[in-house]
Length: 180
Image (cartoon, rainbow, N blue to C red; front, top):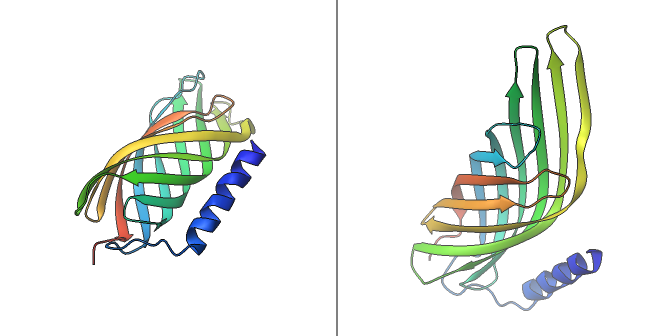
């Protein structure tokens, strides 16, 4: 897996240094998603939750955009005697391929990166426990969506190891990256 990540990093480096920049789009952009609806694939009984992400990206050409997604997702569950919160944080290198031309475009993409998870429980007797129950490891993020000028809608499945996978449905504001 480390050789695979090294190959991706080298490819992105060569792509930036080759000056194969976007011809009709501003190359640098940042997608900010203040709220992501997340549905965990946990077996621990967590319900849907919320996430937040920021994704700086660079358009290598009019159709391919490389970026880095930084995301945190929180899930919760509770009973009459206890409450529990699960959290997953991720650092993912991404690549998106945009279809067509214009201000509204569909895209598909894939990301690979590091996921880390933790849980915290509170019991009715006042005791609290926290642990890195999910641990950490590398995972994949396939995704699809649509870019509508400076607004982005996407669905991504965060395929993470150690029972930390979740589906994220997000709306994001895009700063930069418009046509010129």
